[in-house]
Amino acid sequence: MNPRKKRHSSTPYPRKRFVFTMIGLIIVGAIGGLTYRLSLTANVDQRAVSLGMTEQVANRQRVEQEEMEDNWQAFMEKERAQLKTSAKEAAYYTNTRIAKDAMEANWTLIPAKAAPGDVILVRHQEPAELTWQDKKYKLLSFGTGYYTYVPIPITMKAGKYPIGDQFLTITDKKFETQRIQVTKQMESMRQDTGRIEADQKKINLARSKSSPAFLFTSNFMQPIEGVLTTPFGYTRYVNDKLDSRHTAIDLAAPEGTEIHATNDGVVALADSLYLTGNSIYLDHGMNLFSQYAHLSKLLVKAGDRVKRGDVIGLVGTTGFSTGPHLHFTFWANNTPVNPNLFFGTTPFHWLEQGAP
Image (tube, rainbow, N blue to C red; front, side, top):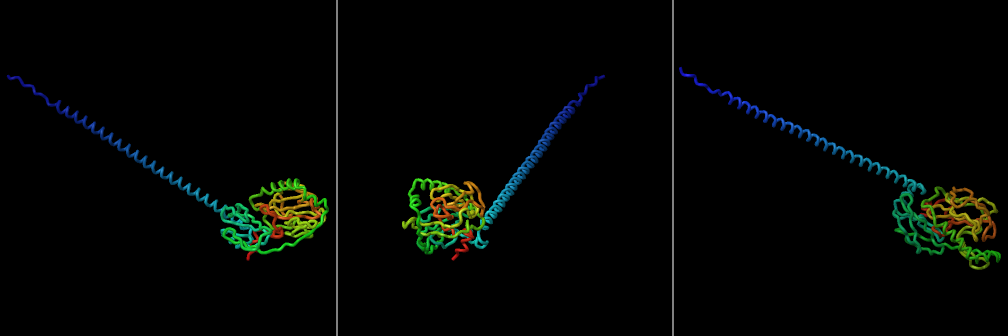
């Protein structure tokens, strides 16, 4: 009996293939899973980036919107401030029509016609320094424009004179002569140049500092009700000798008569001076001062703020004086000017009054 031959089983081979197949599937699955996870991560990252970019855009838009709102707010505030400033300036004029014409013009002369010894107010749209009769005048900011007082020399001849792009008409004016007699003692007072020069330094210092704004809002008033003894502009002879031009008005009144501030202002000087006696200078702003001389008593001191009509002193006859009176005038940019121009009005109203 032939022995039965052993048959080799083929089982190991399929098993190996199965194992390899499974390993392959696992590897493929792992790779696929990893790829999927990477894909998910990439998508998540992409969404995050997209969301981040969207947020950045939103933030930028929000910042731009806030900047636009801030700029608009600043613009509106500036416009409101400009309107307020413009309205404040316009209120000084007689009416809105006159204010509009004056404030829209490049140069405005207030008024455009004057006489020797007068003063005009000049307005310009831009900061500037004008030259007039060999002197320079700086225009100061007020409201939406720039202003300065321009005094007319008392010796100026009639004619037309350019200021900016305008022409100022100067009319002819004659001034009378006055002769007074004083004692030799009083006449000798004029010879003490040392004391006179010392006082002039005080006055110059006081008038060198002025408020850069118009301090008044109402009409100027005459400081006292007195008798006019010497008008503005008279050529004065003392003891038959030519003395000077009287660039003020003298109003006689009983000693002790109350003297009123011609308008709102600040006391620039209140002191006893050699020739003008007890004297007061009030600053009304923009280099305009009023002067009160020969007082018997000073009732204010330097630095005091006064209102129109306030009692600032009493009539007297101190200094170079022949009797109780008030010597009164205005100084515009350190030049004495006709005070009669101011009474019952303001420089801004001269535009209508002096219009040709």
